[in-house]
Amino acid sequence: MSIRLDRNFFQRLLVRFFVGIYLACLGGCASTPAPLAPEHRLQLGRIGLLALPSTPSIEFHTFAKGWAAGAAKGGALGVAQGLVHSMTEAIQHQPTGVYAEPTILITTLVLTTVSSVIYGVVGGLESVPVKTARQIEQELNAALGNVNLAKDLVKAIHAAAARPDLVRYDVSQLNESPSGTAPTFIELGKQGIDTVVEVQFTEAGFRGGSGGQPKVSFYMNARIRLVATPNGAEIYTRDFQYLGRERPFVEWFSDGSRELLSGFKQAMVTLADRIVDELFLVTEFPFDSGLWALPGQPEFGSCWLRPIYPELNYSSLWDALRTNTPGTQIRYTNVDSLQPLLQWESFPRSRDRKPENMPLLNQISDVSYDVKIWEASSDYPERLVHDIRGLDAPQLRFDLPLKPSAKYFWTFRARYKLAGEVQLTRWAFSNIPSNAPADYPQRPAGGACNLDAIPSTNYYRFVTP
Image 1: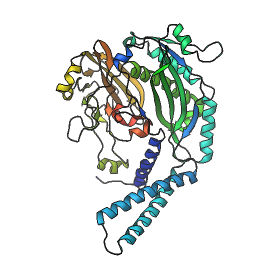
Image 2 (image 1 turned 90 degrees about the horizontal axis):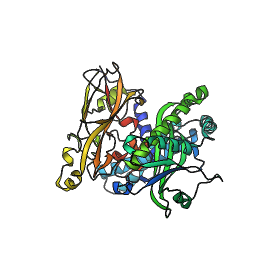
Image 3 (image 1 turned 90 degrees about the vertical axis):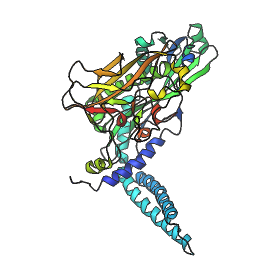
Image 4 (image 1 turned 45 degrees about the vertical axis):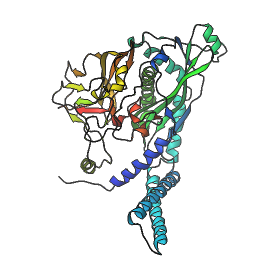
């Protein structure tokens, strides 16, 4: 079989490198806090959801807006890459004699100059024209500028908190005071509210894109803060990010911005579901997440629970060259029928059963499993087709056939009781490819396996016959 390697392969490899760095830096170096401990959740009492009056920034985040900005940013990254290459050359060859220092200097100048020019040109090509960027920002402000995002999210959180596994929590929506301002904590305490969950949107808009017809992803950033009403003390705070599928920007705004409104609704439901999980159910365990597993170990590449069938497979360098797709990607694993028996690792895992963990493991009971399966379109979880909770065993056989020759994403988690309280593990996913931080701007404490949102590149996946 011949390798078809077009001239854009290495260009796209360079672009992924520095665009990934740029997007990963958009959220700074902040890390998400660990979930509340079960004993702290028992002290929340009656909970009130409060939408804070706020005006989130409506942004279009891309590598660069305009050729000049793209060339400048690309050139700066090229200088850094040239310095790294020159240092590597100096270490490997270690020139000696009277001409050693001039040789190193000349090599550094040549490599940094060449890298700066190459990266600058690529950066200019990957930039979004200024006129197009302004059009996108104007359309965004027109569609979302007057929407009360926080109120809509409060409604979605309240609906998500009505799930049967959250029945022990008394959660209600709070209204603004007659003056149109947020009520004081003292006022809420007098109303019988013990804990306030403040909901605030900080940012919304698009990420990504390049060229004159950029493909962009809709995103929303929300901030949640828990406050005790008796003294106004902050209990917990963290940011949540939603990142949707990538579409050409013109599709987002066509037909009365139908796709944008659909993305907005999906963002609300997804954020609300993740928020209630993180606030009330997900537990921080002192167990191995799987992030640092080595090649050859069964859990290599898997965060938390490992898929057994279909197993996890990755593309090779040969696949990357043959398909002109730089980097390592998750492959769609073939299953044996339209009603396959999906299987995954049980919880607690065998590697968790260490002497130092047994006091905690002995408090775990009533283990069951949740599974979600999506139809995949353009390597994105397009449509949720199965959302099953409370399976007794770590496996699922479909009652009805799946579609033939169809691609699916899937994930699973353990549900259990810890000292009598319902808790959850995180959803399982692959920690390869390692570009997850670029899709999820805020870095999770403890590494990429502690993401509460699975990047579209990192779902387990399979294809039917």
